[in-house]
Image 1 (cartoon, protein in one colour):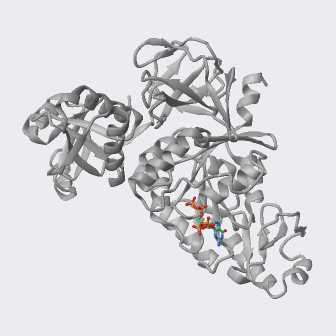
Image 2 (image 1 turned 180 degrees about the vertical axis):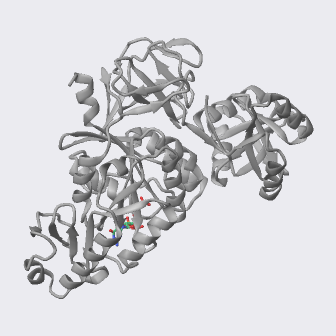
Image 3 (image 1 turned 60 degrees about the horizontal axis):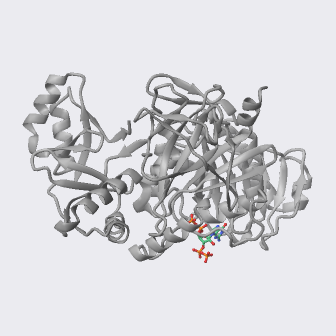
Amino acid sequence: MSELEEQISKRLTFAIISHPDAGKTTITEKLLLFGGAIHAAGAVKSNKSNRGTVSDFMKMEQERGISISTSVMGFDYRNRRVNLLDTPGHADFSEDTYRTLTAVDSALMVIDSVKGVEERTKKLCEICAMRDTPIITFLNKLDREGKEPIELLDEVEQELKISVCPMSWPVGQGRGFKGVYSIYENKLVFFDPNGVQTDNSIEVSDIYDKKLDELVGSEAKKLRDNIELINEIYPKFNKEEFLKGKITPLFFGSAINNFGIKELLDCFVDIAPPPTVRESDIRDVHANEEKFSGVIFKIHANLDPNHRDRIAFLRICSGVFEKNKQYQLVRTGKTYKSANPTAFMAQDRSIIDKAYPGDIVGLHDTGTLKIGDTLTTGEKFNFVGIPSFAPQIFRSVINTDPLKDKQFKKGLDQLGEEGVVQTFTKMSTKQKLVGVVGALQLEVIKARMEDEYKASCKFEPVDFTTACWIDSEDKESLNKFIAYYDSKMAIDTRGQYIFLAQSKWMLDRILEEHPKIKFYFTSDLK
Ligand code: G4P
């Protein structure tokens, strides 16, 4: 195995997907503790804004700006280099999460066993399904009176359209929670409500082992019945199917009590895929190719007005990335070199000399890089699959200080490049429009325009509520469509056509009437 292949086989790059409050922050912290990346609980700050106000969000972002290392948390565990990518806690910024999911090779899904499958988990799981990302699942909060385990499995299968493969099974639940039986390792792990995970597990030969009766009493029969039942209903763990994103191995536990997390992590490092292949617009790019390539999936502006630099997050896709080496920025054809690429290990940032596929490197940027940009050693291809999502809220944006027109345009452009907002221009009126996923984003834009660009703006309502990108192989039909719906057409920053509709109902009707036009609800940034 070459040095490159050895490094690749160690990499495990993943993100946690969950609905707010399911336990993402708690699990992140426990994983970092096991990885030796932190030494005390309380080091990981929740990135959710509880009150959902702008000042709250800005403050939180500012804090995160200072310790930007929380965006990627790297640590070594057993024989793997783990890169855990953080995602925003607030649903209004979900697009940022979607983009981060394109930079991972697998995901850990956390579900609250009291609440079951929730809305946000559903959406994030759909995004993973678009790229067949393998998912491992943790059913959390077993120390609380939650739904029946079998019911939860049904819910996961039905709501998330993914087959489940239980790797452990709870013994009791809520106040009567005694521990889990590990189907994966044939052992019983006892729950200690004090949260100290000592090695309190006992090996058994199988579920018929007499020891079980001594250990858990009357629960033993129920456990046997349940395991027999799940053996009948659910398939045995099959790694191939997991790697294709078709089945999800599933664990039970309680993150706050540090219970079940180690078993989860041990299994995850065994089965999670290293970087393999990534799709570009002209060919598949394999991680073990000698030549470096990578993609920018996120840009983070430092909100400190004294430091106007930004950090672009580069995911290494193939070959070795090196400090001070000249690469090509495919979009512009210009050369690109970084003198201080930053790696994120635990809570530190450090300048690195080399990075391998699966690694995330922070590049200091003053406006050269855009989300979706591909860097190569000279070959001209662009990675696909960093989509923009059709926004759900639209406004017309108006500059309220005519003397600051330049600042207004620059601010809007840069926030667009950072992915905070999508900007469009209406074809008929040249009106500037903004589209966002959540209302809080609009307020953040206004505040950031004032703070960082000294520009002021206001938003006005528009008469459409839904939008999608359009295209067609039949250029004549496309031109006719655009001419006919002139007043409903806009252009995005990449020159792609967007159709604006008053309602979903109207859009569905128009969609049916124009079979030659293709309507897209996500757009790959090119
Ligand atoms: P999030 O990042 O997914 O939003 O969730 P977070 O980890 O912040 O957890 C949300 C709440 O659930 C927290 O309580 C946390 O302590 C609790 N929690 C996490 N895991 C478990 C578990 O296994 N069992 C139980 N019973 N609770 C759990 P909080 O009251 O919102 O915050 P805090 O004051 O405890 O920090």
